[in-house]
Image (tube, rainbow, N blue to C red; front, top):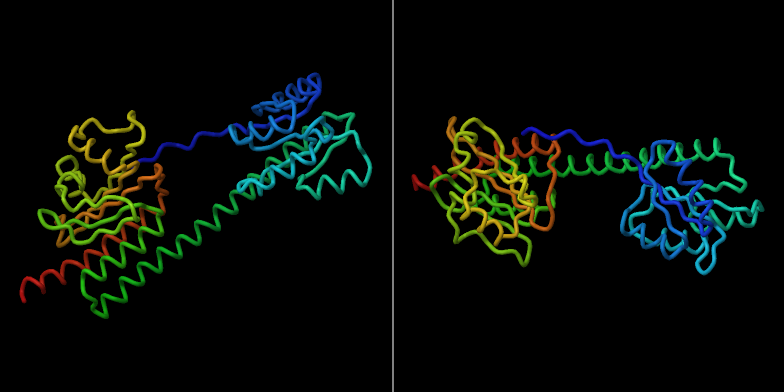
Amino acid sequence: MKTSPIPVKIPLVLVVDDDRAMRGLLKVAIEAQGYGVIDAKNGEECLEKYVQFKPDMILLDAIMPEMDGFSCCKRLRSFPDTSHLPILMITALDDQESIDKAFEVGATDYITKPIYWTVLSQRVKYLLYSSQALRELDRFKLQIERQQQWQQLNQYIAQNLRQPLELKSLLTESLAKLRTIIWAERVGIHQVKGPLLAEVMEKGYPSVKSLSWRIITLFDCYQTSYEQGKIKIIDLSNPENIPDNLSEQMLTCFNQLTIQTIAVIPIFNQAEVWGILWIHHCQSPYFWESWEIDYVTYLGDLLAIACCPALSEQKSS
């Protein structure tokens, strides 16, 4: 699958100060560093703009009428996604009590007025860099945890290849584990020109049992690609990304199933496409990482080993 290059995101800084002139100076100084800037004139507006724009950093004046910077900072830290948000408190109060209070309510750092612009520039640069590093670390930790889950799923299937389990149970349990790992709402396996072998979905989402396997697997659109071993991942959330070869019947069906992203993985038996593993993300679009595609490809190989001999035995008996 070809993936689009990730666009470089310009950091967005929220400047909060009740002094209009100071807001203007801060905005000019921050924009000169190449960052985007939005501003707010008080604590309440700061909270509103944070929710709306999710800035990468906040420069927060400590002394403001109504809701001061300390109260605003405490409120910001109560939000679930602000643990790595840099909050730089700006104050004229250069006393230890105010500094302690700033850190107590969750400020990352502080700077005093009058502002030395070179110091501010370096402080902003450093805090944004540190925040990004922490976010990348969290992302890396999450990736490691999810890779371990993939490995456990593969081990589960491999172990049951040596210790035969009833096929339906093996598929259902494997798909349930898969659905959890990739946060999908619905996953299933169709045999080409055959039945729906297994389907697992989150409560409240409709089944595909009554629908044509050709529609669910997109087989008529991508048979050649499947025969070449290619995985198809389609973003249905944006009309501009929807391929022209999808029929109105397909789109109506996918809309009724509330599919945002669909992934389709061919399963082979003796160099022929034997079945299709499909994955539906319905609550929101899903971006597949390249390493996830590698894991799901290997999963398809394991499922082929599990399914094909088992079904052959069933036919023989």
